[in-house]
Amino acid sequence: MSKDFEVVESRRGKVANTSSSGTVNNKLQDALADNMGNIIELAKDITDINRMKVQSDAILAKMAEDRKMLITEAEAYVLRKNVDTKNTVDKMRVVQDLLRDFYTYNKNGSSNLTGEEFTKVISDILNTME
Image (cartoon, rainbow, N blue to C red; front, side, top):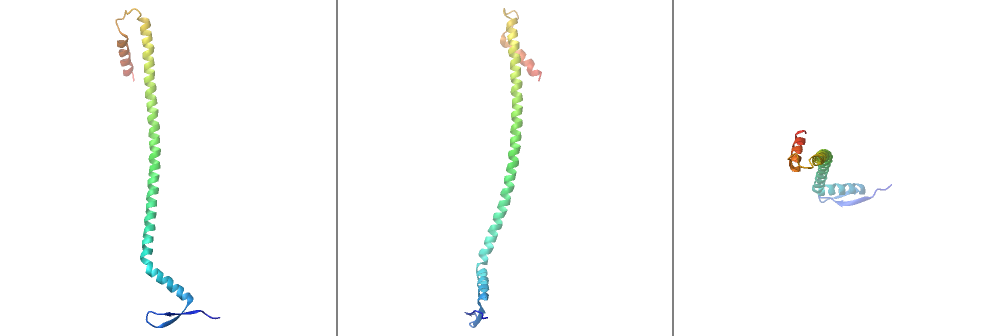
């Protein structure tokens, strides 16, 4: 059972006998010591990236909530406008029916009212009924 040894010059100027596995550990330690600044910078960059990911996830969640709220508001707006439009159309139909009756009744102009005057009066009445 023989061990492999490598002769490495030490920093003190003396020759030291070390095993090859010890050399690997020393090389690793030296590499770590030489690159510790880079390792710390990489760790800092990774931490910053993770923070940005958490922030972006929070922003995306907020945007999803805002989207849902906007959709709800848009649907409510459309419903309100549909109701308003329906009410306006219904009023116009009432005015149209009343004008038809007015012209049928007032064939010879006996009421001294024009169609415009009658329409204005009826429209004002309908607007006050709301």
